[in-house]
Length: 118
Image (cartoon, rainbow, N blue to C red; front, side):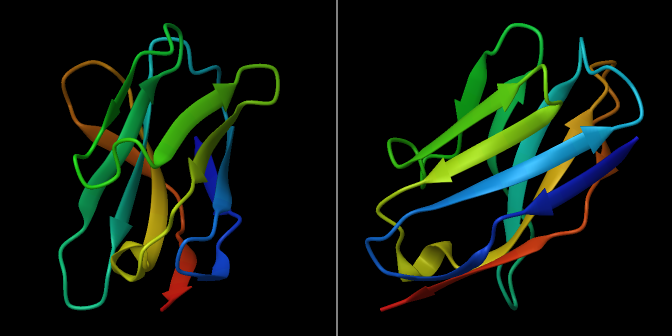
């Protein structure tokens, strides 16, 4: 399984970005896919997740209402639409995959940098 995140960049506070995570190597039915982020000097934190088959989503309180996670089954791609960005959203964003068998986040992609200027 390979995950490749993209779409990061520099944006002003209040602006928007859409991150993409291209997934390959297998079909992801039964998997849960997620976004995490890590800011300098901080631990990696959960941002959002989506179950590939059902589309059921979950969000961190800090992004609820501003970020939207989605997936395109045909393209094997997951997205994170981010609006109303704040300086505290700046981080390296990672996508990850959970095989749904109780072993946690098994696969990780390389991150994409999001910078938010105030």
